[in-house]
Length: 266
Image (tube, rainbow, N blue to C red):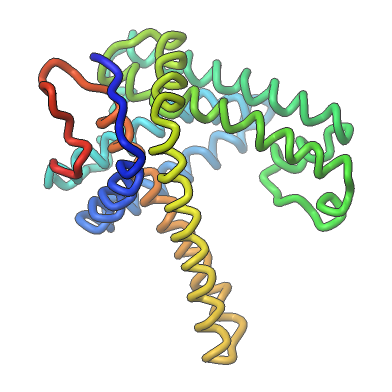
């Protein structure tokens, strides 16, 4: 396995492949994405240890969606058991995946702790409760500073764990090394990931504009509420689908040869 540097335009390819693969198996991938949301929600509801349990399971569940994307891209129907790939890979692999979850939970706790220094924990409490920041928080300078700190700190944390579950599962990389390799791969391919992120932001904005226009044409504000949630969830499922391709193109194995499939080929 070795790191591969891709051109900036590859970010567009990842988005295209994510959308194309999703529509190859929309029901299966949508169902697995809702399974992911359900597992995270149920885990977080467990008294006392809920949040920690959800964080411990997050890498394994993320890997399940990547494995499903790989299956769908290969032309196969991803069965529900694919979502459990991390749990079926053996005790050692599962232990490594859960270790990743603990590491992510610790990282998130550090980020939340730093944001609490700005507004006495108001933003952290809101975020951990799963609620959107209130208007009062948006108007408060201290809370705005906490939000900005969160955005600045959450980005590198996300990059550290972007590829880590896949590295642990498919390449048996130890958890600590997988986090380091993931961060290096993302930074070395920062232009491609920037294009990737901007593309998804643009697609989301187009959806919001289209819904706003539809609402205005129909003269029914309730249309926005009916269409917006399913639309954004579908985009979120496509984003998770596309993460597999970013991993595939950033890390080469001996079987990949000298030319990686970054151009969009299977």
